[in-house]
Length: 121
Length: 133
Image (tube, rainbow over all chains, first blue to last red):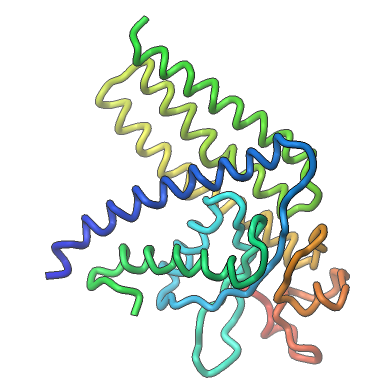
């Protein structure tokens, strides 16, 4: 049954993501055109819940398409959990947890939209 | 001049202004990471505004399909280009300007020497294993 909802989940995700791209573009352009630099840059290592290379690549691309967050690369798994990690640069997040929370939001919606059976679980 | 044409012209000029702001950002932003982010606005929403604006000025079914193809391909490829630029800065340990937070050992330690491949390498570890892929 979840196959039937997949196109709608996917379309809904595209709409949500398009809006996110507009919002983040406005943030970067505003910072660019106003005097001074009001960014608080930082780099985090984000442990993803992606299972395949396609999911990881898509997540990295989505993070980069929204300006203000930038994928810097992946890291080989270090522990037994074999999690796929992304190094991400953020410009407008006060601290690492808030950047992590935004990435988790994108990842949740992306996995929910991409997986035929739905859900990031 | 129809309403659609006027809206199209406005959207094209908006796209051009996004390009201008991106060019300004390359000069004004302080380090490679923020500069890549500034260019990303042109490669992303800039191209989309210009092509959609052209479609509004001369709307047709075949052009709509072309614009959808342009937007999808442009977003996918410009993301890969941005990642390639940012990654080259990252693996040579280019320092951030005024970092507010970081997860990286080399950034905290102030080691900004391009003598190792990639971050996430344990000190004393085999560098061939730590190479990011």
